[in-house]
Structure formats: structure tokens, C-alpha cells
Amino acid sequence: MDRLEKLFRFKPTQIILLSFVMMILLGTVLLMLPWSTTNNAGLHPVDALFVSTSASCVTGLTVVDLHNDLTFFGKIVMLFLIQVGGLGIMTLATLAVHTMGYRFRLKESLVLQESLNQGGRAGLVELISRMIKYTLTIEIFFAVVLAIHFYPEFGFEALGYGIFHSVSAFCNAGFDLFGNYDSLCKRNDDYFLMTCIGLLIILGGIGFTVISDVINRKSWRKFSLHTKIVIVMNLALILIGTLLIFAVEFYNPDTIGNLSVPAQLANACFTSVSCRTAGFNSFDLMQTEQITQLVMIILMFIGASPLSTGGGIKSTTFFIILQSMWAVFRGKSELTIFGRKISHELRDQAFAIFTMGTIWVVTAGMILSVIDGEVHELEVVVFETVSAFGTVGMGIGITSNWSMAGKLILALTMLVGRVGIMTFMLSLLTQKTSRIKYPKEDIMIG
Image (cartoon, rainbow, N blue to C red; front, side, top):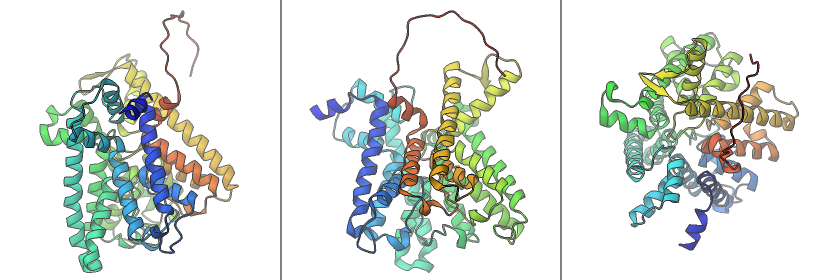
């Protein structure tokens, strides 16, 4: 108990960051063990750290072929890291100690409140219980469905394939067991598989509060403002992404140009869904047009929704920024959405998250470009950086080529993207409230 009290002397944001770091280190050690790899040598420490970070932060970037390079034990380790990383170690730890009868004190409740991105402490344990229930229900259902679908191809191994891909897709991790880094490229005519994976990605990416809202309230008028914004933004981003990717790649024979129009639309829609935070791809991203890569970079940077298994700056953040800019152009001092007023503090946080996220991506991209020695084009390096920050995991064939320094930069970027740029920065900085009031003076901008 004394150790627990010492732990909670840290700030909530520091505890959240520390929990992910500890899980990453555990995964690193396990993947370095000889029985984790098929060559009985274990992964190199830096490769193990990179892959463990990618799995714990549900990203999907990898420097090893899970199917060919990892043993059954190594795959189990990856599955464990993906599941715990998707839900968050604080979430699972909370449920465990609560089940044992432990009552949370104020400081501990604040940690949970911060990790779940909640404004109040009421009903935190109930929320966590619902998160676990929804997760298990959805993952088990789709694991069975996928196992039946895989059975003609893999036989009794289909159950393992069903479980792994159900968890990987729902947690928006993007790891697969098909081998040779192909993801779904050789299965882009398997519309049932793409539909199941796509639904899992969407359910994992909209957030547990939205799932709960839809199940319990069942009416648009009764939905919370948060749920309405998430639904509108997800539909808009999926639709816009689908149409743009379809239009740009329509005549590209190296991607979807040789497919029928319905198949092109299906693959464009799957890509639009997946590149938000999941990382599965149904065609070779190295052959895509630059405009398509730019569209995907934007979608990856926006990411999923709060309290979900995805990363990025979050769809609600982007929505508030767009609405705030529109309000400024129209000369409105207050921001109202669906009949509700958004506070100035929330607007400031949204712009801060967007700005800090942009600065991190630009800085990390510049460092990686220097490390790369300009061997690869800048847009490819930026794509890789944003993919890590958005915990997407889509790569354009250069992930395994990074040096030790490059892998460490990407690993840190994945960690920042998973815990959230705001949480990461607050864990490093000390907040002070000043009682001094200064005179106001305007400056010229724009």
C-alpha cells in the first residue's frame, strides 16, 4: 500500500504515461526472448522496443513479419499488448482492483478521470465495466464470424486468425497474420472480410461513450452533443475520403484502376476507414498518387474519436476547430453546435492540441528526414511520421529500413500519439495559476 501511495504522488498525466512505458518495456523483454521468434534468437532490443511500442500504442508499424518471424508465443505477446494497449492499462488495472474491493481515493479517481478523458468522477467504474463488456462482446462475435470465414483456408487455425484479427481491428492496431507485409492487398476482392474489418475499425474508433449512448438512448434527439459530433464527423470523413481516393486512383492500374467500379468504391471506402487509425491496406500504398497520400495524411492526423482505441488529434477536436474558424469568419463571439454552447476553454484546448500535434509531426519529420539522409522523398517520410503519430501503422515500404535512431524517434511518436499530445505535454510541464492580473493590449495579426 505504501508503494501505491508513492505512485499516486505523480500527476495523473505522468501516471498514464508511465503505465504505457512500463507495458512497452515488458513487451520489449518478452519479444527479446529466444522462444518469441522462429530463429530462436529473439528480436534485437531496438526492434523489440519498436514492435512493442507499436503494439502497445495500437499503431501497426512493424519491422518484423508476424506470420513468418514470430512463434506462437510471440504472437500471443503481440495479441496481449494490442488488447491491453487498446483498452489502456489503467482501465484494466482499475477493474481488477475494484473487483478485489479496493475503494479509490480522490487522487486515484483523478488519474482515472484523466485517463478516460472524463470531466467528472461520477460513474467511472461503471463506465470502465461497460467498456470491457462492449469490447469482449464485439471482439468475440467478430472472432467467431471471421473464424468461420477463414476455416476453408486455414482449417482449425482459423480460430486463432479470427481472434487475432478481431482484436487487432477493433483496437485499431492494423497488425495481420497473412505474412509478407501484404496486409489485405491479396484479399482486396474479399468483400466480406473487408466489411468485417471495416466495421470493427469503426466501432473501435468512435469511442465507448458513443457506443453506450447509441445502445441506451436509441434516438438522435436524446444523444449527447459529443455523440452527435462523432457520428457526423465520422460519416463526413469516411465519405469525403472515399470519394477523393476513388477519384484520384480511378485510372491508376497499380492500385484500383484495373478493378470494377463497385470494387474500386469498396477498396476506396475501406482505405478511407482504415487510414483514420487502423492501418490495414487493400492495395499497394507505394503506388498511390501523391494527392491520395496527402488525403491519407490528413485523415491519419485527424484520427479517431476520444475514449476510443485510436489516436490522432481526434475527430471532435478537428470539428471544434472548423466550427470555431467559421464562427470567427461570421463575426460570432460564441460557438454553438446543435443548440449547445462550447466554452472558450474547450476551444483553446482544441487549438492547442492541433498546434502541438502539428509541431510534433513537423519536428519529428524533419529529424527523420535528416536521419534518412534524404534517401526517400519528403512526402514518404512525412507519411511515415503522421502514420506513427496517428497510431495508424500504414507504411510505404520504408519502416524496416530505418536506423536505430529513426526507430526510436518513431517509437516516441507512437507513444505520444497514443497517450495524447495534451497528456504527454502536461506530464512534462508544471501548471501554475497566477493571481496577478495584467493590463490588456491588442496586437495586429493576420
